Each structure stands twice: as C-alpha cells, then as structure tokens.
Amino acid sequence: MSNKKVILDYNATPVIDQVGVLDRIDRITSRSLKKDAKMHGLKLALSMIDLTTLEGADTTKKVVQLCNKAMHLHDAMPGLPTVAAVCVYPNFVETAKKTLKGTKIKVASVATAFPAGQSSREVKLLDTKLAVDGGADEVDMVISRGKFHEGEYNFVFDEIAAIKEACGKARLKVILETGELGTFDKVRRASDIAIYAGADFIKTSTGKISPAATLPVTSVMLEAIKDYYYKTGIQVGMKPAGGISNAKLALQYLLLVKETLGDAWLTNEWFRFGASSLANDVLMQIVKQTTGIYQSKDYFSKD
Figure 1: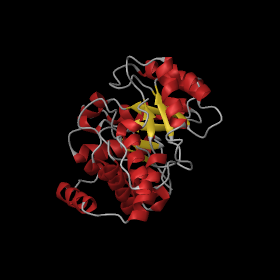
Figure 2: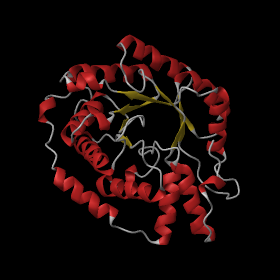
Figure 3: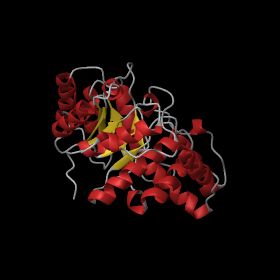
Figure 4: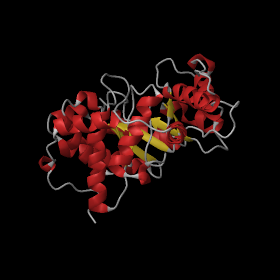
C-alpha cells in the first residue's frame, strides 16, 4: 500500500485526453432515467447536499434559519432524507452545532483564509483550530493557487498535510478552485497533490468564481480518486461545488460517479454537492414525481 504522505514525482501526472473527457460527458448527458431510478437519484442527491451560507453579511439568525431548513426541508412529505451538512464560517460553527444538536446533519466550516487562501500558514492553522474547537465535523480548506501556479508543489502539499493534522478527527475537504487552474492537466496534478497529502475529499470550487463545478472537471478529479484507490485501497470523497442548481444536472453527476467509481461512492459519506440552491429544485422534482403536480421553487423555504 502506498504511503499517503508521499508523492515521488509531481511531474508524473497523467496527461489528460481532453477530447476523450468531453466525449464521455456527452454520453452521460444524453442518457435518461426511468421513473423509479429517477426518484431514487433525487432522494440520493438531496441527502448529499451541503447547505451553505458564506457571505460577509451572515448573521447568527441567518445561520439558525439555514439549520432549521436543513432539519425541515419539506415536512409535508414525511420520509425525505435530510441534507448531509450545513457549511458556515468558523465563527458560526458553535451556533450551527447547537441548532443541529440531536440530528445526523454534519457541521462543516470553511477555513484557511477562504476563499482566496492568501494568508500565512500560521493564520490558516489558527483558522482551522477555530473551526475544530467550535465542533466542526468537517473542514473545507482552499489550496494556495499562487504557489501551485509557481510550481511550488511541495509547499502546497506540506500545507495541506499541516491542515489535515490540525483537523484532528474532523474530515478535510480540499478545494482546488478549478476555475483558476486553467487546464485539465493542472486539475489532475492538483487533485493528486491534495489526495496524497491527506485529503478526505477533493472539492472543485469555492463557489465564489466562475467557472465553478463542471462535469468535465469533475470527471478528471474522479479519475484521480479512482487511480489512488486502485493503488492504495483508500477511498477519497468528491465534492463538486458551485453552479449546480437543477436536479437534472445533479442526476448527471451521480451517473458520472457511478460509472467512474461505482456504488461505493454513491453515499454522502463519499460524495457531496456544494449547492444550496439545488435543494429546492430537487424537492420540486420529488413532489412532481410523487403527486404529478409541479410546485414553484418559491413554495419551498429559501432560508
């Protein structure tokens, strides 16, 4: 089994066949699901969402409202799954933990000078400590993209490893900010660095820049996870984030995961959506599948 702390050669990253990736996504997006499979997929997608509020105007009240939405997605339809987690800034972790007490919903916190990541390692470690000390179950960090573009791969690797250690028992999601990486080859290299440095999940984006998550980029990242699993037997999770606002697209992501990694990853333990607006569209589709009636997205709580 490979040592999770070592990459022997950063430059040995596989070259990505861009045409092949795009052709594969065309095949995924052309497929359709039968009614029963669609309903199963919709409920699965709902259970994989990280509801998120990461704005400068966030308040305690807004965080409590988001937690209440997480616990009560649509009480008129019993038996629906809850979302996977609520994601907030470190200073709101204690509020979220208190509000969600007694549920299975996780509390995730961004850290490491999110979203730009432009700070010292000392500050990033303190940011992580604040989240963990508040009770965060998961930490979403951002890589140092400037260092990555300068070819300082050891710096990026060592920083991720240091944050992983600071997380303790909390699971670490490493945000690559793929929209700033530029090419599939760079996305693959950043994925490999994050995985081997100790990421529990790799994540596409902060959701603060465009483009955010895309199916082709996610495909490249899933292949990195698959290759690592074949080498080590260790599972790593995946989280596309940003720009996934409708149920049809979410189902296409699930098809891609199933085709690439198999059913073992089709659980919120190993796959998440960072897409708060997705929840209402999925709920709308579930109600339509159940009752035959379309409800407006405005029918469901936005907070």
